[in-house]
Amino acid sequence: MTLAARLTLAVRQGPLDSGSAGQPAAIDSGDERMRAVAELDEDLLERARRLYAAREWTAAADAFGSIDPARLTAVDLAASADAAWWSGRIDDCIRLNGEACRAFASASRPVDAVAVAFRVGVFHLARGEQSLGAGWLGHAERLLEGCPEGRVHGLLDSLTGLDANLMAGRPAAALETARKIIDLGRRLDDPVLLAVGINGEGRALAMSGEVAGGLALLDEVMVTVQQGRLDPFMTGVLYCHTIAACHDLGDIRRMRTWTELAEEWLSSVPAEAVFSAMCAVHRVQLKMVRGEWAQAESLAAGLIEALDANRTDYAAQAWYLVGEARRLRGQEDAAEAYAEAHARGLDPQPGSALLQLAAGHPGAAFASLSAALAAAGQLPLRRAVLCSAMVDIAIAAGELQSAADAALELDEAAVAYATSGLEAMAATARGTVLLVHGKAAEALPLLRDACTRWYGLGSDYDAAKCCQGLARAYGELGDAASAGREAARAQEIFTRLGAAEASLDAPDGLSPRECQVLQLVAEGCSNRQIGAALFISDRTVARHLTNIYNKIGATSRTQAARYAIAHRLAGAR
Image (tube, rainbow, N blue to C red):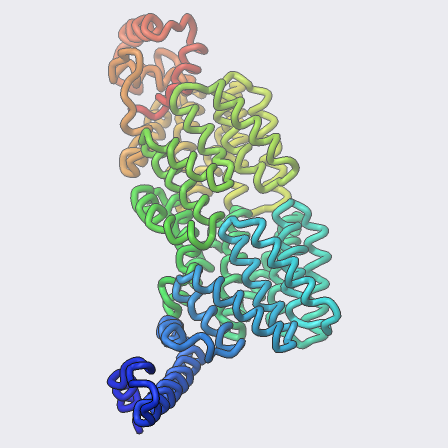
């Protein structure tokens, strides 16, 4: 009898109790139906297994879901859970994995039970469910007692020893665990453990300051991944670890390379898989660098629902990026996005402090960022991003020593890690601090170098910020023509990107021409230089300055310059 015929028979026979009691024909009919249903389930099960083996995950999840759960073995339950995960059905995945764990334990297969329990723990932790995650990992460790050493031992170490120490800023302890995993992988001849251990060693070395060696190890592992030698889940994990490490290091070029290759790989897996959304967050980060802020916000906002169900940490990052895209375009609802990021466990700094600065509250911004630096402890890479923002904020708040300290720390990080992004940030910070101390000649080559570096990384916005500094440096050195050229270049970029600097409303009743004069004052230009740049007489410049001082309550050029910085009028031409 064919599958279709058995299915038809099973449906036509109706419920098993449809006949009258004591009538053998009805019993026979019921028995026949039961046999048909059993045969149907067996065929469906074989089909589900074939689909799973072929990595047709969505179809496999549907097929497993149509079968009586009582007919599924522990292996089937685990396969069904895996198929559900790749199909974006995380709740089904966790439930089925729990059933698989119990089935493996009942069948005296503790190692398999541990492997499943480990994944359940990881999935709960990823959703921000700390107690459930810790409970399942503890259950896995208890089940593992007395079991011979195997892959699952190394995977548990990778989570509780390697990743936990990296997140806590303890690279030495993470490195020790990574090398332990590598040793286990070699003894077991296990390519997964070797890849996990070498990737962890690379991340730990990079965090320790041995960046070149660490990145070389990351690249080595990714070559193995590219060759398709690992299972799909671990492939996705290693892509995410590598791209995130490159982002944290400020290695934008390497980050872009691995993100593009990850997207190629993702074309072969279901779009519902959480790896797709995680990779898209990294794509948003790259769009932010390139100044594609509107696209970045739209993409990030569209990822949040799926990430909230699977990866709370990435959902927090997506909200932070939404906030950044809004802040840079001068949108008022940036604060709401930062609050959403904070609600998911992410400190929304330095974006939140920069938003306070943009609102004209440099003192509050300085206090917020100072607190963020204190909370960052001794995590150099986290502190570097904060220090970069601190330079501008401290200068606006009149805390020049703090600006110098932040620039020095950033410079030390750039020397230690020597990545493209950190070097660009450090050069910008050094030049900016020298400029505010009146050392235009020393600042000029640093700002020119920083500008070139930012252009090389594709960050026109940061390059434009450097152009503003260059305009001020040229102005202080008496080169009004070059000052005007750099200021115009910055304004063109801000306008093209839709940056807030291009569309600021003039505060305190300042006219557009007064804003232009105030900008050049902030850039250190004399009255004669301002007149030359704007093609007006020195007397007209003096009249504008008198009007400006009256409107903003300033009594000196220094106060006027601070006002311009605090109200983000630099580059407002």
